Structure formats: C-alpha cells, structure tokens
Length: 206
Image 1 (cartoon, rainbow, N blue to C red):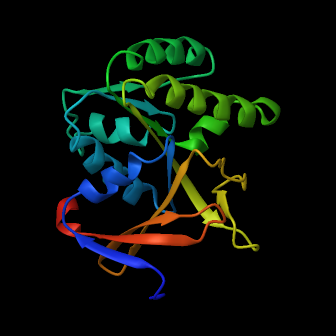
Image 2 (cartoon, rainbow, N blue to C red):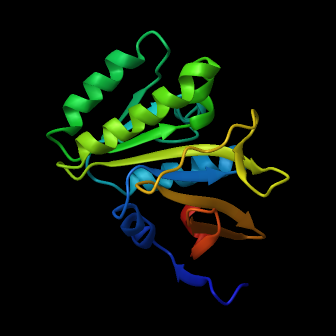
C-alpha cells in the first residue's frame, strides 16, 4: 500500500458519513453493481432521518420487491422517467428545503440513459447541484452512485457507455471496491488519485 495513503480500520459507517458532510453531492464510483447496492443499503439503513431513493437503474427496488433487501420505513423510493422527472425534482426540492433528508441518486448510468446525448450532461449536473444547493439550509445530503471502469488513460468512465464522470470542486468523489475479503472505500482527489482509504468490516454486509 502507498505510504501516502491513510488507511482507517473501522466496523461502523461513522467515518464515511463524516466524509459526506464536507461536500455535496458525493459521488460513489463502483465496478460491481451488487457491491454498490449492498453498500448503499447499509448506508441508508444507518440514517434515522428521511431518505429519498431515486432508483434509475431499478436494482435497489428490485431487491426490495424480491425481499432480498428490507426497506426501512423512513425510505421513500421513486422510479423516475423522462416524463415525470421534472415534477419529481420539484416535489423533492420542496421537501428537502425544510427537512433534513438523504437523497440517493442511483445511478448516473440510469440517469444518463433517460435523456438523449445532448441534454443529459447539462440537465443531470443542474439537477444534482440544485438539490445540493436547496438542501444545504436543512443539512440534507446528496449521494450519487455510478458503475464505472477505467479507460486507457486511467480515467474513470461510466460502464457501459464510456461517458466521463461529472466532477466539480463542490463534489466529493469516492471509489468502492473489494480486494479479497476486504471492502475498501477510498476518497479521491480532483485528478482521481486516492487520498484516504477506509477498510470496511465485511461483517456489516453479512
């Protein structure tokens, strides 16, 4: 392991949740859909305040319907489409303006797939930043997931599709991976290099 990387061992999600307080939105990159869903489920179950889950790729709601995942009563699931998305975002914006809420956008891949090439990047960026801005006064959090891979230039891109990841100085960027039996959550800097690593106790996910 690179000596410049700080490895934090822990068996709770407190450290990661504290990371999310620094920036918004926070983007979680992962190469494995099931790993991403398992982590996000554990994360949202650790929050006591309301959670709004925007399920664009239908993985999470599929697990809930099949009873592989038990949905807590504080979690509200939306399955947006191109027709109702603007109405949904207005409804959510109104809610989070007055009540602390966790908003999960799962995932960028599904979000991009809902719009055509020309409008998707601009609209997605505007939507996520709008929710982050409105939610700031109520201390709400916005988390965005993405299924990714690295291209030949060692850059993170959406998989499939190959689109580059939205990034800004206001966003937190993280990578979730599994090495052997260890689950590693890494904070990334603006150029995609690892700044800090958290080793997650896999007992949390059994």
